[in-house]
Image (cartoon, rainbow, N blue to C red; front, side, top):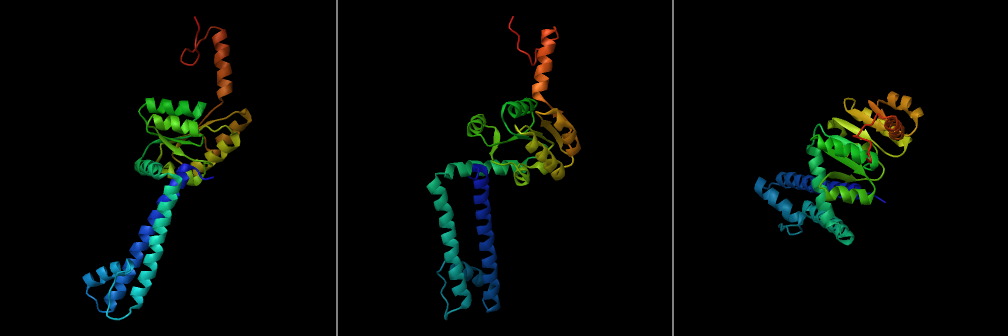
Length: 251
């Protein structure tokens, strides 16, 4: 099943293609009627009327017939797209996610967080506290709804790949935090992010220490093993070296 974000992106692309197709067809009609002897203004309005199925000419004109046909196809395409949104009850969601897409396209120097769970969520929270712009990429509906309730920038995605990173603005991002639960996926995303933006800082979580050399070779700037860090901090606490920013103390 497509993620909500990807489905919205598909609808946006459909609307873009629809508008582009209308412009192209009108341009063809304008040129055709101009060559046939119409004044520029007349050629333009006749093209619009023909596309809408209302053009009146002294004799049957191949352009009028062709534009009538394309007009009918375009109308059905627009109705079908709108019907799909209505059936799924996604008009409100579509508008919200369209605004998110628009906002992300304007971002520069922001940070992308892949996976907004226990690790990724805290990474994003820390960056936000430091005044940075953050885009979360997540597939868990509960986490997504929680982030949206906080008015945070979150993209509802499934599998995170090159296309998703591009949509999240990786090429203009200052950095990316990759915090999925699978080391293999984190390694692949590191390679992809490095290829798309060699200048972005890359921070990655890992579960297996054996992955560290591979992640370094892939281009990760910072690598952390949360479980290992937790063990070290608790061991330090037992020996009296308590990091109160990370270890909660029960007096």
